[in-house]
Every structure is written in structure tokens, then in C-alpha cells.
Image 1 (tube, rainbow, N blue to C red):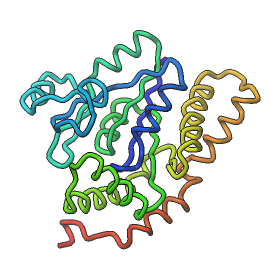
Image 2 (spheres, helix red, strand yellow):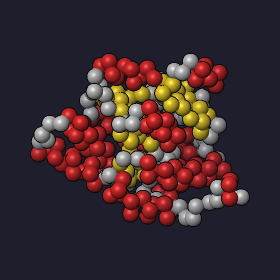
Image 3 (cartoon, rainbow, N blue to C red):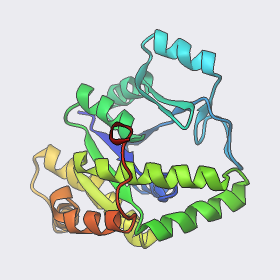
Image 4 (cartoon, rainbow, N blue to C red):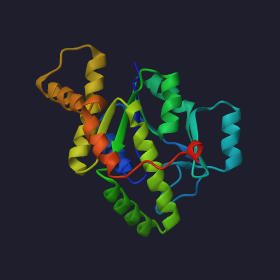
Length: 235
């Protein structure tokens, strides 16, 4: 039986690094490379980070119902092809999706037993520093773009209440171990077998990161963003 793992995070939270490390250390876990209409950044290559396609090509996939989920973010489309799930099921492997909160809702409606994991930055200040560093490296992000991403990050974090697990990406090695523990713990739970001593440790770590157990930390991080700005309905 294929388990679908959804990982979401605000831009700049270090999600891609965690996903790459997870893929190296967990076997029989396939990764769905998303399609996007945005141009490549920095050293990104087609078919690795994303499949970079035109807007008409993306809209053709939509019309053919070839996408498991899709979203429009900062004026660009992103989406996951259904074929990745079909291929993983045929091979008896699990599937990892790196998608945003819009896509997560769509996938959970179609696959209610999917496991969703939200990656948080330690604070607004740290997220801003990471976005600045990435912007300098890629030469892509203006000050206005940075402000938009920070505002979007707050909105996304407010939606993390919909997720099963919450991880704070503060110390990289620890975060990698925690993410791996969540994935392997879910495999153990769903297998129905008696866990070994090492597997018990994964189960304990995963339980610590259940959303209900992370609420104080979520509140602390949200508080670092300051008051929530008024929505369009409030203006």
C-alpha cells in the first residue's frame, strides 16, 4: 500500500534541503517533481527541481485532468502530475509531494490518509535572513518581493493547523533526523508489526511533533511575525 507524504513550508524555510536529505536516507520513497510556469532560478535544472513549462502547456495539463493538484502562487502555476502517484503504486513505493498549502488541501480531499508535514522557520527574523541570502545568491528577489513572501509565510503558517506533523527547521541535522523519524514512524504504524527498539525511538520522536504537541511553538513563531494584517474582507 502506497503512503503519500505531503511536505509544505513557507518559501525560505529550507524545505528543499530537508527533502533532498530525506530522499537519500529513506528507501522506496519516490519524489514527485512538480510542474511550474515560473522560470528557473540560479542553478535549477529542468526535471530536477521542477519541470519548467509554458503557461499554455500547463493549462493543457489542467484541461486533460492530468494533475493531482495545482495552485497559482505569485502569478505562476505549480502542479503535480497524477502519473507519479500511479507509478509509485505500481511499484509498491511511497510517494513524497513537495507542495504548498493550496495543493495540500486538494490532495487530502482525494487521498484522506495522506500524511502531511509542515516545516516552520524558527522565527520571522530568521526567515527574512534566509530569504535575503537566497536573493543575493540568485539575484531574483526585490525588496517588494521579499515583503510579499514574508506576508505569505504568515498566512501559510496560520494554515499549519491542518497538518498532522510540525517540524521547526532550526538545526539542520536535527531537522533531517526528525523528518526521517516521522516518515518511518508512519510506515511502522501502517505496517501493523511490532516495532523494534530503534523503531520505538522513531515513534516517540514523531509523536513529539504531532501538531497538538507543537501548538505552543507554533504560537511563538506566529507571534514573531507580529499582528495579523487585515484581510481584504476587513478593508
